Image 1 (cartoon, rainbow, N blue to C red):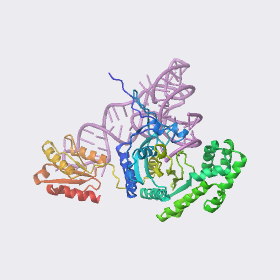
Image 2 (tube, rainbow, N blue to C red):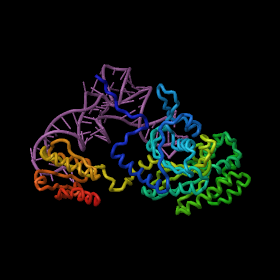
Image 3 (cartoon, rainbow, N blue to C red):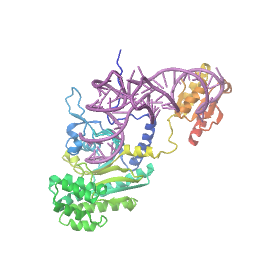
Image 4 (cartoon, protein in one colour):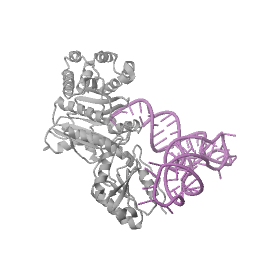
Length: 440
RNA sequence: GUGGCUGUGGUGGAAGGGUACCACGUCUCACUGUGGAUGAGAAGGUUGAGGGUUCGAGACCCUUCAGCCACCCCA
């Protein structure tokens, strides 16, 4: 006798039951449609990559979270993908014939062995859209405009995209004279400004052994008004990368405005840092402020990444939507459209008795042939039981084919939401049900 | 990865150390050509797992796993 195995899920992973899948499909559908409206095309890549493809791309902290995926007896060193940008870069490097600029989107699971929490899972979907092969700030701006379109269409009202530039951060380090080895610490500290305030950041820097003099210089910079880009340019006069970064930001926001993005939705934040090591230019992060739920997207320009896979380096920029967080929030606030049903099934065809079963099956198959999602009942049970089932499933329409109907060559159509019933001639079956579904 | 909190049948909750209870849900039956109602009944847990203390543990201790929160990091 086999011993029972306790059914359990691996840490940080979850099943998506049908009800949940309907919601996910809705969100993903919105995102997909907008991606395509902006000219992005789908791409799929294997969930496994060679370890060498992934290693050395994300920085040491992130790298620890990569799942090893070697086959017991296999010879290849494999890993579960950690994000979608690195696989994209690999694809672009392997397929030089792709017409540039290459715009693709990918909505697929990635794996990170982090400690799970609400809205943070070890297996989660990323929704990425990237543009490869242009250095134009218009590409970055288009990404930002697209983020806004998607969030608006999902029903979010208040959000703001924070913009910064890696070049500015680099210049900030140069200007203040931080030892290169301490740069990551510096960035980490700065990034917390909003959260822990100036004093907190100062303490953090002191702990990171950044000299008092350096700290003073950094605060001198941070204190500059963010909207006065000229002041920044002035400070960075002898640090051309910094000026370049500022210019890029200026251009990016100008382009975004040309695409109808409201000025107050863009916030240049020279203290915003994104962790991934491969970013080289503008970086962005969209924060939803009402309701206050924090960062829902993150992205930026990574002009060097493809060059790690190919002699022909190509500039690239893109964003990733935190779709899991979006779904969690939409669940909490019930932001799904009211017509998002409980089931995909439109019609339930009841079976009256053995004599009438063939008639019911014929009706069901006719509806299915007409592309109407239809279920039939399998056993010979009382009508009441069948209706109870349809009702519990949330199926909107029920068809009854009993002796009376068979004799008159009609069927009875019951609308479970209203309780209304009507007789329909067999010949008009599909047509009438279509009408009914459209009005629902 | 670090720290804290939590862990009881499918779900939500209850049980002052003495051998698990309630609600909802599920299933069956009745109401028998029509559901979400009602009535009757049933199944389902050894209290996340493992060990210990005790005459005796869901309750105390240890270990472990998981979830949640904070940190880290990030989507």
